[in-house]
Amino acid sequence: MLRSVEEPLWQEYLDALEAVQESDERGDPPARRNKANDRAVEVGERLLAVPGLLERLRALVPSVRDADECEALGGVLDVPVHELWRTPEALLADPRVDLPPGSVRVAPALYLPEMREVEDDEELLDQLHPENLLERGTDLTRLGGPPLRVPGRQTPAEPFLLQVDLAMLTEEARWRSEVADLLASVPLPAEGVLQLFHSTTGDSCTDPELPGGGASVLHLTAEQLRSGAYVEPEAADYPAHVVSASVLPTFAVIDDEDDDDLVGRLFDGVVELQRRSDIIARGGTPSPDYVRAARRDPFTAVEAPCTHLLGVPHHDCVLQPEDRQVLDERLPLQGEDRHVLLFEVASETVFDTVYGDLGRLQVWVRAEDLAAARFDDVVSIWQSG
Image (cartoon, rainbow, N blue to C red; front, side):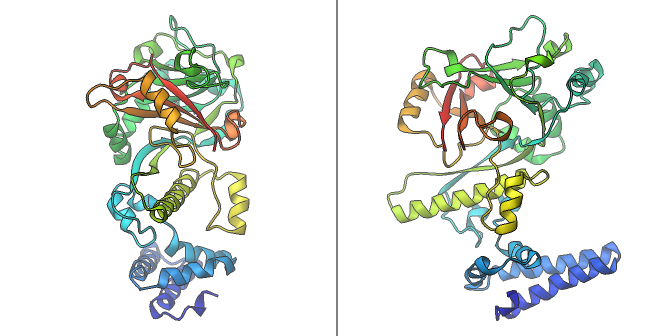
């Protein structure tokens, strides 16, 4: 099928891919295999400049089902989110994306895809061993499970959803530049653990009488953790899950266009960019639904959305005018302050669709409050996809 495209450089690319496969099968030395890989990459990059070729290759997608051919097409057609997102201008200008500069907002987030369920209470309790807390031997970030507690600090009665180990995040920023960039973009506390609780029955729009619309954010400081942190395993509302956290982009259309055709094109572009981010975030632990869908059509298969810290709202869950009004009334801004999406919680998997199919809970805070580690004033918005 792929050989039917009569373009010399494309044929050269297929030859280069075959050379890579043959080198692997022979068990060539690393230097020789790397040379073959570099050659395939170099030819693949040159393909992007061939007029009309990407369109011709996309036309083949519905007919291609062979795994090797799908991989070959994907190597050329897949949107290069992982490689280019930190330079949005280059990403939007890439021929596989091709969107006007400044039309799409690209904001980093800490994706929190669940990796595996914690099987017993002993593993949770081991996290709280004094040596782990003091020496930073264990990442305390997780979804679900019982909340981490500290003496003298009251734990909210609402269900516990997640916690993020800020000290571990700060440590990783020393050697992972994408984490350093994330922390530079938003003033998170540098230490301690950030926790989220929520009633799961409403939000700041439907339950205005409840602080945060039923959402509570706690910041447990390092000093509080060292004072005797503990958990009560029987208090879990949702199963505890270890996560595989990574910093990747979230995307949103900058909606100031009057051209409906352009707005539609921008939205389609954002959908594809976000699809790629979700796939990359869950790359190590793909969801069963995605695996099944990818076998049928890897070019349209959609991965389960991830809960994330920071970033922008999902394209299906943008703030409506009534949501924005509540946010502005409950968290009024002064000067150059701004609203920050602190958490967006995906309803699927860990939380058993408590917010509905494809639903999400957003928790917002003022940037100045976040910088001062003040979490008494938050707004929750329950969004349905």
